[in-house]
Image 1 (tube, rainbow, N blue to C red):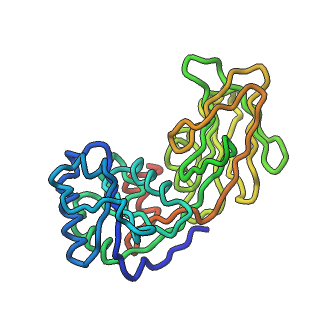
Image 2: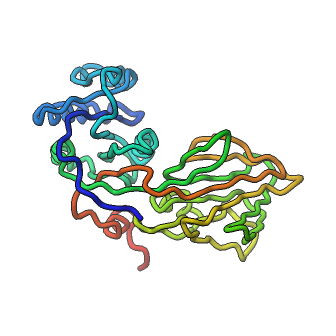
Length: 290
């Protein structure tokens, strides 16, 4: 289960990560550096971050000068950039505090109009930490997904034919465009577009849904955390792409199979005290029913 804990008592070092449209975040970078200085926090960034922000990044130190892990990662960007930061620090105790400069910003702690207050609270350690689970998939080693693992037919290729087993029992064999296994945090992404159920943060388990199933009977399935998902590509079919958090990582060949497993407590997402998941659903996606 995702757990809420008090944020770090003291933030002395932080890494800053921004999205691919720097002109939108130059001022926010300056504000972040200033807010950190007021509480005695040093802010570090990769060379690419410092280069793309020019003079606005003058107060950022090179990440190569950082000893060990930072106390915090601050993200100026959307869900994709926040997810990138969560993946970077998966398996560590580093919380990720996002300020939304994207489209939806479901994972962000605050929106741009709350930027200054959000930065003050971030660098002061005035936040809670939500422990997020992940999915692991056996491909060329082990890949970790904080959002979802997708098995997708190739563009212009034939319709895929995928079977999946849970706990050793086959429960689906469907001609489709693909299959998605999503964490609770990822259930509002690709899975939601497949009309799969939204899993609240704190739910122990994950959801499996189909992309454009060629049947009227395929239904999403919520899987218990200890049950391993096995996905098999039918013999005689074309390979399908395996995509982890939006990044292509491997292929599932004809007749091949691979396993997806649930892993608890893999990443830490910073949120302001009093954040309510259901209020966020309402604000970001509107009414669930009218």
